[in-house]
Image (cartoon, rainbow, N blue to C red; front, side, top):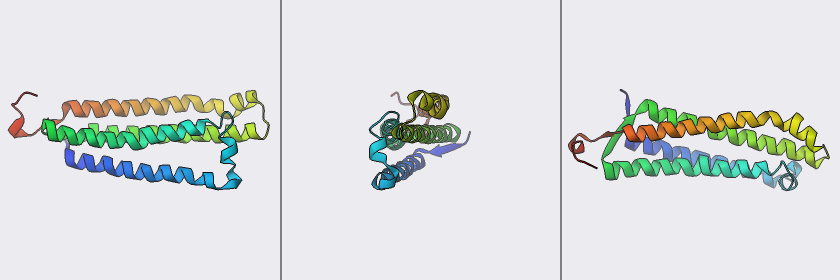
Length: 171
């Protein structure tokens, strides 16, 4: 079985945290451009979905990888874990990244297009059925992928390899 060391996995999660934090800052920059009318769109439904998308990204895209880095580092320190299946670790990373970017992007697009349509006077029924309704199921699929990635991470943690010197000790 191919393995990845805990130290390398912690570094990967810290890098993911840093990149996602930079992306989160990038998402806030368009608010400064008056032509995008973000302050107005954010105040009406469905523009409020952009708030949910942003905070979901901050929690699942920035804080969660930082949390995983901490969990893996603590598992090394307190449980002498040294390696984990590379397949489970990468499945966890890729599924959660695809999930968080997919759902956040679609929720942001839903909020922006729907909010702009509401701002210019398009009716709620046209917005719901014609513009944004199709995005709801794909958002759910991306959330499901994120949950699968989390399950893969938990499985990797449960099945991770302890150092040979401490393998016989009870936890």
